[in-house]
Image (cartoon, rainbow, N blue to C red; front, side, top):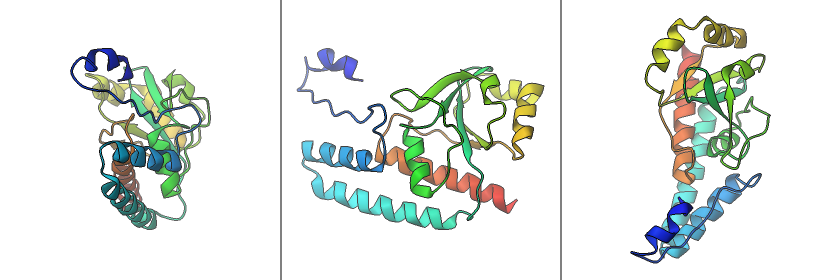
Length: 192
């Protein structure tokens, strides 16, 4: 939202604190960002508590996961034929790293940690597909009938999982929300 700086500065002072720089989004960057934000609003003790509580919760979530998990392929549909695939530099990858889950996408991503690609580029990638909501109108119905999508899922050897939305451009709370959602989806799938 930095493009709104000029408009917003007409009504209040604006300070831009960036998190997303190519190749630099990891747990240390997220906690540093949390501390920088807290300093600006004079909430340092709350930030330290948030970080400590988040690390404890992530360790608890990690302990719930099976020792052997397939890598996951994180996708979000843009339309019936195109997805954002999340990898390096994404808040989702930060969460996966903290949980010890491997990301199946090892190709290039942009500054926000995703690659916009056709679903045909997912063929042959070894990993369980995790679809992140929301789905655009009509996509769910289309996928239920799309033989190519069903083939892609079948060739992974795992059912696809659907998780609720998480702000993909967020910070520590987004990482924690996604960690909870992916853990719940993976542990539910394992027990079925």
